[in-house]
Image 1 (cartoon, rainbow, N blue to C red):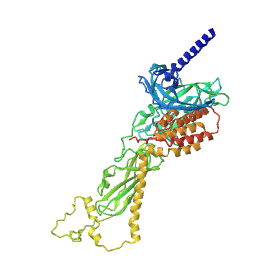
Image 2 (cartoon, rainbow, N blue to C red):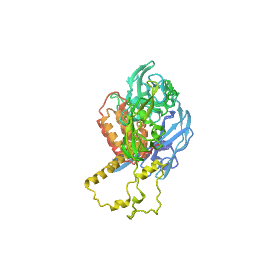
Image 3 (cartoon, helix red, strand yellow):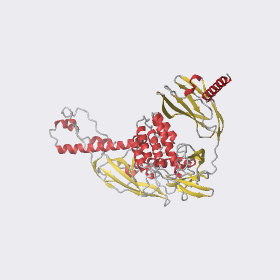
Image 4 (cartoon, rainbow, N blue to C red):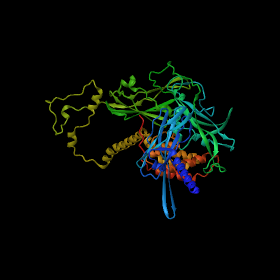
Length: 624
């Protein structure tokens, strides 16, 4: 009897413990379904700026809704989505059972240090509402302590406004070494710990994007400073100051990274080939750039030419015109080519043409529009086109056109001139009133008033006087056009249309760079994968593909952010799980300094990218 009572008591105690464990993690409204959902609350202590993840594990759910997130001052709470799915099948005594598991993640990001409490988070599973328990954690402010140093260096002394200067952004990251395992984290893994998307790169963001489009990144070299060994990463950028004083863009540079706190043994697959090791923790640190003082001087007022329009550098000019045999009032297209003698294409981007509409040497003999002239940069030359119309038949040339610029090497203004262009101008032909034929074939009579062109408007006189023929004259002609004539007449317009279409296509590409990136993302990724030499390059290719498809700056995403964007594009749970496994595998391999074969990882990455290409990515919007 006592044994029976002991057994009953033991069974009741086990049942009570089981119920406590099942319901202890979640405060559930419906305890009957408590075995379907569990939760992992993450760490009770985290760093400011680092997310704390709460993971809901749901089993055998048919209908699953997104969690309802609370709002807490000082916290950013975001639903990340599905991070893992699994299915297990068991057969016991001929009876088959299946268990489907889905993990849903919520990330909590503290903005400042302090103690925070996250209220209950509700989730609807098969019509039942589950509520998590309130979760309390502490956010701690991290300290840099010389682990990350950022500065901007420039060789040379003072520069003039508009003069190009070569700048170098230098990132010094202290090489992390574990005495316990005698391992130093390599430079590739150290670079990936920098938060590219959250950092402020200033004018160097363009350089990083350019490297990312080619599947490249800054490579670090090991250097020694007074307080230890550092990896030095250098990024170059040419900049043209637009004003005097300090360059504001440089003072805004702020770099963030996750710095290792230590290494521990883990249960995962070996990444150092001798024991299972991973980071024990990552500390978020940041550093603002220390900018070397740059003396930017204004351009001198003394000796400034009348037609100077801000060009700084060393240039040559050439000019041509077509046609050169015209009548009064006919258009002549003048093409002006401005070339940079030192091959500096950046000097041409904002280059303005000489103000021909303000030059009396030209306006006395020619009509010229006063609107702005658009130019196109081709390699190291910028091409401008302007239309001139001669006022009289006594004009024999288009006069030399001056182009003024400031030469910073000489410290003075220079003016170069094009050569004069000979032209032949004939008088404008006019038709008598009696020679004008109506559409019905009858000539006009003297009784009808004919309004003659005004002599005070040379442009209108030239246009009207050059009106070729009337429709009646064309109708009365009995000539037959031959194939040669048709070809001569048709080929120039066809060539013009073809050239115009090419120009329109070029302008469209220039005005929609994000859309072009998105369309060519898969091809670029395939090319970059063939060039990838290590695990870090493969991970960079995947993140770069997501950047291109989502319109984000190149190399600006972390692995988790890439997965979040993929989920928004419609990636299903198996694909997201596959991405997560691949990222984790690549990151673990990157901790080791030993080179491994990347054939398998490249193949897996290509398959993931192929599946991602089938998702419904949002067409990137251009920024005006």
